[in-house]
Amino acid sequence: MEPFTKALAVVAGVMREGAATHPDNDWVGRSPEYHLGRAEEHLRLWHDGDQLEDHVSHAATRLLMALTLREVDVIREYRRNRLRRLIKQRGVMHRCR
Image 1 (cartoon, rainbow, N blue to C red):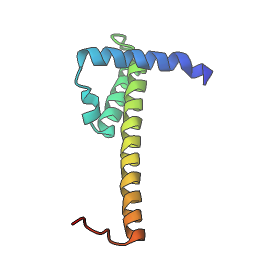
Image 2 (image 1 turned 45 degrees about the vertical axis):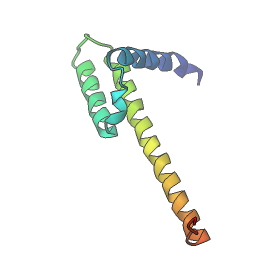
Image 3 (image 1 turned 90 degrees about the vertical axis):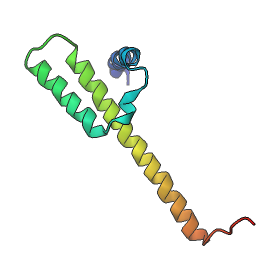
C-alpha cells in the first residue's frame, strides 16, 4: 500500500479541484463508460505530449470514478437480489392490516 500513498494523494487533489469547479458532484451522474472515455482522452493527450494538465493523474482519477460507479451498481444489484432471495425463501410476505 505504501507505494500508492502519494499517487492516491494526487488523485484526492484532483477530486478536490474538481469539487471546486463542479460543486454538485456531477461525476456521479455519469456512466462508468463516460469516465473511461475521458480517461482514454487524457492518456492520448499525455501520449501526444500535451502538458496543459497532469493528464496521468486526471486519467487515474477518471478510472477510479468509473470503478467506484461500477462497484456501487454491483452493491446495489447484490442487495436487490439478496432481498429477492429472502422474500422467495420466506414465501409471500403478509400484508399489514
